[in-house]
Each structure stands twice: as C-alpha cells, then as structure tokens.
Length: 493
Image 1 (cartoon, rainbow, N blue to C red):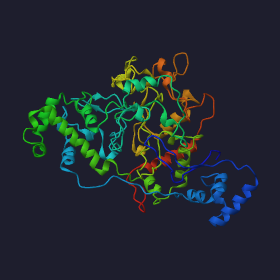
Image 2: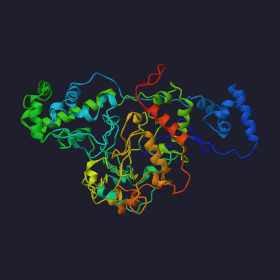
Image 3: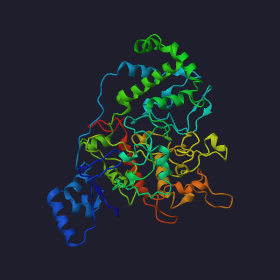
C-alpha cells in the first residue's frame, strides 16, 4: 500500500476537546536502500515470524523498518500502545432519572397516543432511528413526515455548548454574533488526522445539540419533539402538563417536587424534561463505551487484518482522513474518544427527494443559518453547515446524513470518495446533461462547501483517494465502533 502509516504513541498533550497533539509518528520513506536490508533482519530476529507476514500484512515495509515492534503488533491486530479508559461511573438511577425514564417511554404524551421519545430514539438501535426511513413520521395520525434524519442520543454527556471558534479568555465578552462576523473571509486550516490542533482554531461553529446546534441542554432538546406537530405533537405546554398530571407516575412527581408541582404547567413540563436529561446522563446505556475499538484501545481485543487496514486508512490524510473530523484517540485524561470534533461542515450532500418538504423547489435546509434555527440567519457563511455526528454505533444505522439521503455505509463512503472526482456518480444531471453538483444548497452558498479537507480536496477526473477494497476495509473498522463487545466472546449480537 502506498499511503503513509500513522502509528499511535502515548499523547504528550491534549489541550481541550477540540485540539490535540497525538504524539504519533508519521513514518517517512526510507532514504537509503541499506535500511531495507537492516529492517528485514530486525523483523526476522524480533518476530520469529515468516516474512510473508510483512509482505501480506496491513503495513508497508517502510513502516516495519522504522518501527518494527509496533508494526509487528499492529499487523497482528494488537494495539502497540494500550491505554486505560475512564468511563462514566455506573450507579443505581436516582429518583429523578427514574422519573425521566417513565417520561422517555410514555406514549400518552403524544397527540396520537402512540409515540414517545423512544419511538424515534430506539434503545435497541442505540437510541437512533427505528429503520430506513429518511425521516420519521409523527403527528396526530403518525402520517406527518419530519424534516431531518433522526440523530442518535448516545454520547451527548460531554457535548459542549454552541459557540464559534476556539475558546479564548479574551473572547469571554464577545457575543456570538461578533465571533461569527469575524469568520467572514477568515482563512481556514486544513483538517487532517495527523494534525487537528491547527484546524481547531478555525472560526467555524461547534457544539450544541440537534443537526444545527440550536440548543445547548438535553432538557431543551427534549422539548422540541414533544411539541413539534410533525413529531409527538403535544400541542402546548399546558396540554402536556395535563397529560403528566394523569400519568401513572404522577405520584413520583409529587414526591420529588411537592403537591403544587402541577399548579404551574411550565414548571411541571420543565421538571419532566429535566428528569429526561438526568435519565440520559445517569443511565449507562447512553454512554457505555463498550465497543471492540474501546477494548482494542485498552489492549483487550485484537483487530482483524481488514479492521487494521481500515483503521490506518481512517487516519491517513492521503486516503480517507476520517479522523480529521472524527477524532479517534483518547486523551491524557483517559476519556474515550467521541469520534467527532463537534464542529460543523458543509458537505454538499445531494438533495433527498424522499423528503416531502423537498417537493418545494424553493425549500432548502441550510442547517446553522436556517430555516429551523433562526438566530443565525444572517450568518450566511454558515449556510449548509451541519454538526459532525459521532461515528460510534454508525454501522447499526440505516439512515445517514442530515437529510437521510443515504441508507448504507457503502453509499456514504462512495459520496466522500467520488463527490469531487466523479460528481456524476453522486448528483443528478439537468436537462442539458450538466451535473447539478451541491444541488441541495443554493448557488450563492456553494463556496461554503468544504473543498479543503481530504479527501474532499480533489478535482473531477482525478483518481479517487480510496479503492473499493479501501472502502470495504474502512467499513470493517467502523463496525468495531458498535457497543456491546465482550472481550473473549466476540462481536455483539
């Protein structure tokens, strides 16, 4: 394989959740032929393994020469530099969280009497969507289609609040609008898996919840689907408070908040949603960090050859470069990687005509700058940007991207690989045969689309960054991010 190889070593510094110095070693090409012979001898002595392993393994020979021990272990599927991960503590749910669990599964809070939070965020599907539909249908008869694909509710316990650019002490007294204004025409550093520290300073949105980051708390996030006429369609806060008063768990409300809790509908609903947030924070099923990859990070699992190749491609700027946005290494604090940098990107995915709202040719979902979010409408430099989601449990999903246009990981991989090198394979053609690239973003915002970060920095006619086998190996690696792996017992069922 021709791409450079990234072998992880213990990090020397991890400043914050957006930047890192991974402390890895980028293996360079051997400058003298003599090193090939020396490396072969080192490997033979060290490994006592047939050299066919070197030739047929996931690593090129130059990697073995530079780091023979680490290369040997990695080619065998082992982590050369295991770490100890610090997971959230597990304890019995508080009474508040138990109340939140009741609310989360309560279908009587919807106008149809058939929809709850768990209807869209299915526990058995890692709190993601229930099936392949681009958007879930809700409303009074469960026939009203939503506007976006359902995101997962997992791994939000460390999600930062919405902001623009990196945290700086001198920015404490600057408003969000002022920070956003600074980003107009601001230079943007390229994101690569081997250097995320520089790109962390980019003046782009980051953090927040939903695809557009319009709220910062789990409590606020739970309110939107509760009242949305396309989802649970609760009608009003007053109507929801009345339903809560009649719920089987109403006594628990009184125990926690007093007999007068239902006298003020807004207080009752706010407390219910706060309880839902506590349920998400306390219940370990929302953040187990129990994937095969987590076990591999700790030296408790061995990756297959395809998974190792996929891991290397995931981290290679000349190939997939996925880790440029989906950070995959633990920090010095031992916290497991979230597989997102929490930033926003305009990827220019094709328009999804399976969404009924898109039958209106003038409707465009532009993420941060609207139309669902309204406070950033004037910040047109962000039009088309959506939050980078975690890739944890991504292989269990059947709907991808904010508009649900894709339904398999293979389709997603093809998009990244061919968007710029072969646009005709991704986008439809107009009556004159011209490919309608970025056809879900108005022309005036096409300059917002990311054409800087690999592999989205190529041109039509160029060779794609990854081969078909590469894409298969990346998917094999992504499957290691599925929770439920038990060391010694194999993959989750």
